[in-house]
Image 1: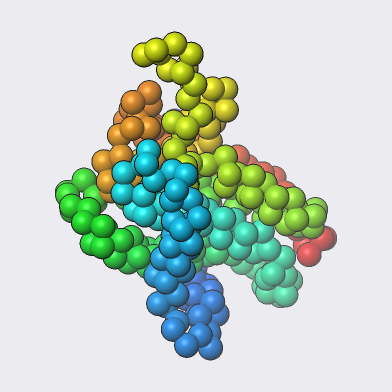
Image 2: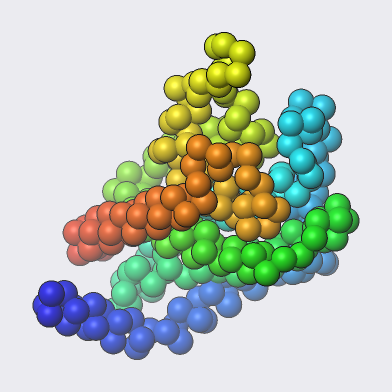
Length: 281
């Protein structure tokens, strides 16, 4: 136990030396994203709003009847999934994209992946302005529980850091991962209850008896994004329908465990391969 504590302390001590570099990289990524943009940072609010509006128009007749406050339901799922997709896409080439710097001087390679995910997190925080607008427009009451969205937000951030490290390491050796990942995220989006409710997979076999389909069980138990999005919705709009079979406290624990496991997998994979990066970038 003492050895583990000493190792962790040593890692944080080394990380603190490059804190200023991390801040500069995050600032660079954000400035590059909005460079020469007329509306600039307002796109962080407008993008989720416009996306929510389009999805609401397309899906409102199919799902609105079974979901209360459908626009708010949509935007909660959309901004979280968009953060995961954007951060992992940015992380894919975080190492390769900084090959010139890595060849000239020593910099911890993980710092580039971490900066990409963190800059996307800054954009996510800005996009909460769109969430606030939808809450006001739909008359959703504000409660102290709204502040607890920090729980699924932190869990998702840790999850994306771990996944980003895994993807960044893999992309150094296999450039085709970018194309494969775009297909995976597309399938992942449709298997995540963003614009529909997971209850739509329930099957009524007998009067008063509801059976959960196999796909519904898979989404509830093995889709990390379901865990984070449902927590987020619960704290924002007290959306409890989907939490009947999976209580919120259980989702929190599952989400936390999933985040830590992904971070460990990402770190172990990244550390095991980082010394070979220079041969492939």
